[in-house]
Length: 120
Image (cartoon, rainbow, N blue to C red):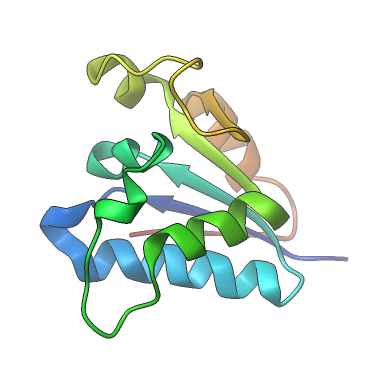
């Protein structure tokens, strides 16, 4: 049975290392053939918008736009419904391939047999 990895990233530039770790793990998992679902919540919500990942900087880390592109190409990226609403982000604002969904969908994904959930 194939394993699935659900990753929720809650941090943005204010906690750059934690944020970068989440995106790095997600991209490496995709490259390894793991089914990945990356959830953007809290301050990471802004990375669902075009150009925002390019503003992120962390020395000695892979560029965030490259990591995000990898996950979008081989996995799924979801922006939290409430987080989007608090930031006035709508579906027309987000990068192609990013969906907006809520806690019920997150719980469904995380509770699926063969799934490992990580929160950063």
